[in-house]
Image (tube, rainbow, N blue to C red):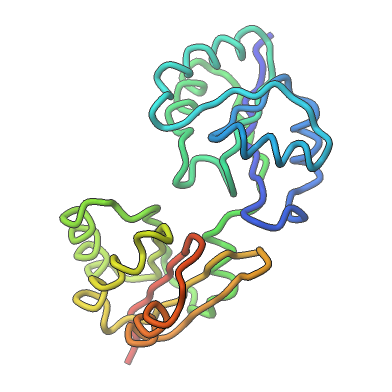
Length: 225
């Protein structure tokens, strides 16, 4: 009998955010497939869960998919987790899920924490279409194409950026989003979580006065007259 692939959401910071169902699934599966096995081992150990771990990340996925699929065909149940939040959203996993579905292997979501709804719920932005763009590209030309696309689309736009890139990347935003409202979430759910809101000038002041630590979730919406 074919096994099941579970997509298990894990905390983005505060470990208390993990769900009871997620803990049960992690205890019951035969293997846990992790983006970073060292990171996931710490999470499992915190909840006294001891499982076989398989690594699966962006640059090794082609080598690992066949092995993982075979385990599922052998009747093993697997849980796929990312380093933080919901798998596949800006994390590896899409190719594995697609291949599992192509081979009629059950794929079941175990919902839970995610940076996007976390930030959106406290942003105060009006209900309107939502567009999620994942992490900003390291390519300046690709970022420019994205910014131009955003300007031509109504709604709230969300993207993610790393602490070592966001200060420099934010210098570009004034050329495209000077007439937008910003909401930034940093270290969400953690001890030093921080939220910053305002226009582009406010955001630049924040980056000029603050030591940048932690990943940022950025929401922007055009200022309405």
